[in-house]
Amino acid sequence: MTTSVDVIVPVHGNWKVTETCLRSLAAQTHEHRVVVVDDASPDDTLERLREHPHVDVVALERNSGFAAACNAGIRHGTGDIVILVNNDVVADTAMISELVAALDANPHCGSAVPVLTKPDGRIDAYGLCVDPTLAGFTRFNGAQMDQVDSDKGWRLLGPYGAVAAFRRSALTEVGLLDEAIFMYGEELDLALRLDAGGWPTTAAPHARGVHLGGATSGRSSASQRRRAGFGRGYLLRTYGVLTGRYGLRAVVTELIVCVGDIALSRDFASLSGRIAGWRAGRTAQKRSRAVSAVDRRIGFVTSLRLRLGDRRA
Image (cartoon, rainbow, N blue to C red):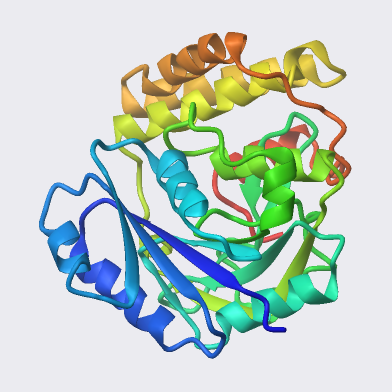
């Protein structure tokens, strides 16, 4: 029996990019169902989506964020495998079949990780790794394809959010994305929960796609840095990092990062985001820190280097 697949594509405007993504999904070699969740697009994306009868459309009344949009799509579907795909990803024709094959070959795994490249051919991400303070980083970012070897990089925790394949039964057991996080950090949290729940990940090195968003560079906007800060503060509290063995290291690291961000950006977006996330985490369900995929080789200095964007290992 063919493994059933739901592909969830959250969108918030930018129809031209979304259309390119949908074309690449239509060319896939594995049968699948596409569910596009319109997260209250500010343009005519929703109207254009309804002109595509082969796509299931879920329309949200207000802009609810990445996690909420993905969850709406997951709940709408019934497939054995759920693949989250950003609308700025162009999938190779075998991407879905390779992700499904990886999960079929590893029934104990809850997720599968593809290789995503930038438009120039360099690696955007080959999954996520996590340091002892539960700070997450993309693996092999900026490396050339011939430098990528999943067995030699930082330990693989789970998929990066641009393309992430999950076993539905694993999501049913550990829960979906945490909608308290509007954007940035929600995929890391899910990867941590899956690992702690006994659902490790597996690499799918022949599952490929181009992440157009991976071509961007430069300083993020204040809104982006605030949201990223929120995710970090939220996870620090929900996982009880500051009360654990690496609490002091986490505090020192976050102070350095925030002071550096204030100096560069001349605003308090990153710091205020962390404070807001920390406060929101007070009433959130507490997580288990028993994550087997933590890579203790990522020391204090290395973690700071990774924060600066040198993620080739």
